[in-house]
Image (cartoon, rainbow, N blue to C red; front, side):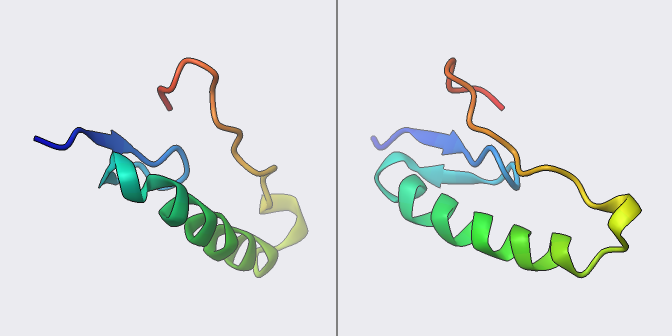
Length: 54
């Protein structure tokens, strides 16, 4: 059985073999959405933790 892991950006579960592709697309969507916010509400990009947990 394939193990599921959480995306550190959106928190959704994905199969381990697809998580890297998903995270690249998810981060791009996050940057687009974050850029549309007023400057005082923008946040720095989330970094993947070394422990593998969000």
